[in-house]
Structures are given as C-alpha cells and as structure tokens.
Length: 254
Ligand code: NAD
Image (tube, rainbow, N blue to C red):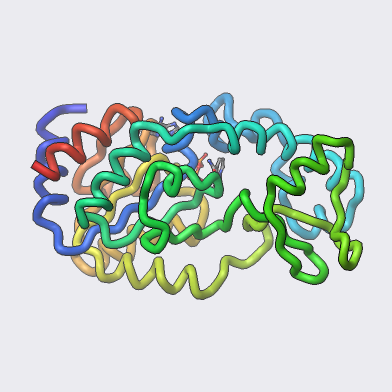
C-alpha cells in the first residue's frame, strides 16, 4: 500500500461532509474472530448449509451441530477485545467524522471500542442476544451460553419450548427493513463510502457502496483481499485494517 493512496484517501475523509463506513468480518480477524471466506475462515470448518434458517428449523441434528459450534464461537466473541481498526473508526466517530457505521458483524466489537451505538447499524443483527424462533421472546446470550456450557445441547425457550437462536440473520432470513432503509439512506447521502474488511460478496450490504458511486460519491476500500468493486473504487488500500486504519484516521483528523 502506497502512502500516496493513503494520503489521498485521508484528504477525502477530511473534506467529506458525510462519510459512511461498512465493516465486515475482516475488521475482527485481528481480534481473533475468524471471517467466513479466508483460507482459515469459518467455512473451512463448518458447513454453510447449517446456517440456512429452513434447514436449521427443520432439523434437530442441524441445531445440535450448530450449538456445538456456536458454544465455541461465543467463547471467542465474548472474550475478544476490539482491534486497532475498531479503535481508529471509534476515533473518527468521536470526532464527528462518520455519519454512519453499517456493520455486517454481529460481534459487538465496535461498541466495545467506544463507537456510539446510535451511529451503528448492525445489519445482520447481534450475537449478544438470543431470540425464540417461535414466540419471539428475547434473552441475553450470556444466559443461554451458561445453559449450553452447563450441558444443554439444544437450548429451548422456557416460555413456549421453541428453538432459541442468536438474534443474528441466518441465510434465508430477511434483514430488518428499518435497518436496511437507514443504511441505504446513509449510502445515498454519503460523499465518501469507506469499506473495511469485507469481501463484498453478501448482498444487500455489498450493494451499498454502489449507491454512493451512482450519486457521484467516492469509494475507499481497505481490505486484505480483492473485492468485486476494486476496479470502481477511488482508492484501494490493500492490507490489514489494524495497520491501515490508525494512520488513515490520524491523517484524516490532522
Ligand atoms: P467475508 O469473510 O466474506 O470477507 C472478509 C474479508 O476481509 C475478506 O475479503 C478478507 O480478505 C478480509 N480480511 C480478513 N482479515 C482482514 C484484516 N485483518 N484486515 C483487512 N481485511 C481483512 O466477510 P463479510 O464480507 O463480512 O461477509 C460475510 C458475513 O460474515 C457477514 O454476513 C457477517 O455477518 C458474517 N460474519 C461476521 C463475523 C463477526 O461478527 N466478526 C465473523 C464471521 C462472519
């Protein structure tokens, strides 16, 4: 990554009247949480079909496998500390330089880093809350985790007996329309759209930067691997978010 590209991108961030950031699993890999599609990502160990809502609801065996993996996954998530990348974005937010942060992540690390919750749209929900798939009852994930750690293989709702799942969007589940509308509105009003740690392969999140481009805004991509929008971006800063974002934020706030 050249410093010229970083300086140019920092200049756009500094001058922008409205900046939206979209983060993906890549910003949390430096916090020890694997992403989906990298070589040692989650799909290398688990079957994506087990995250399909119809299959999950239709099979006790799938739910048993899912919870065995989720028990392990939540130990990682609940113990994780925000990365330098999360910290840099929280600094930009604290200085009023980000109008909205849209995240595909469900790990809550932006909030842990000090980012203002009201400026965050968790497009795919959160891992820190569980919801009953039958009656909609919500309860804190740590409560469910404690039950799973104590030996419950498939935790069920104590009110109606329905299947409990994290309040995160599975494949085949719709995104909350209000959340999507807020993200789309932000993207359409953005002068600069900053993508961090996303392969831009999961829609509708992946389509958000295109809305900014269509309205004449600039696109900056900070990612370790290639994305389908690299050729249309104004700057592509290739590398680790934790190494690129701190100097980028510092230069943008100078
Ligand atoms: P993805 O796995 O498709 O892509 C991650 C991207 O991040 C890759 O292109 C990779 O090259 C890049 N990357 C990895 N480490 C990086 C680093 N240190 N710095 C910069 N880039 C890095 O993830 P996605 O685009 O977010 O989409 C997949 C789905 O994954 C989302 O729906 C999200 O809900 C879910 N997910 C979330 C978490 C989490 O909450 N932490 C973890 C895994 C998956």
